[in-house]
Length: 161
Image 1: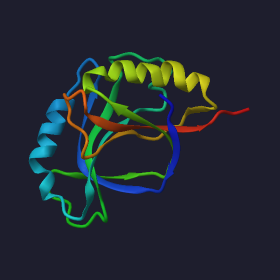
Image 2 (image 1 turned 30 degrees about the vertical axis):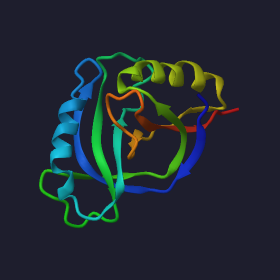
Image 3 (image 1 turned 90 degrees about the vertical axis):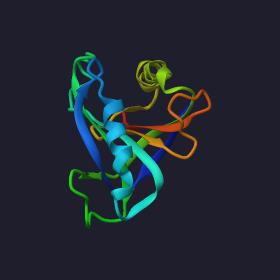
């Protein structure tokens, strides 16, 4: 599984977010709440959804499934005008990403991320950059289906020589 290296411009996102850890995973609750109200968000750009994780700078230095992070369920918008009550905005900064196309069940995520962080990243010319990670969930995404497709976006920068 080889990624494409892509650069993105800043994006404006609107959605819901929760603090959680892998051991206290509240992703299903977050997405259920978001999906019930997503049509309230004006100025949505397309239908692709962002499943975003914001880790503190040292999250991966001493990794533990008990480390907490901020998880978002969001959609890109054209502006931050008229954000419905209960939703928050987030400005995703520009930057370079390693983009992995994944096809399969979401339950196989541990294996996929294990490969990305344990094999691909150490052998690549890149290191993690301290920006949000996200999965882009498009029309081919179907959570529990083996035919589900998504893009995994990992923030990277060139390794120091």
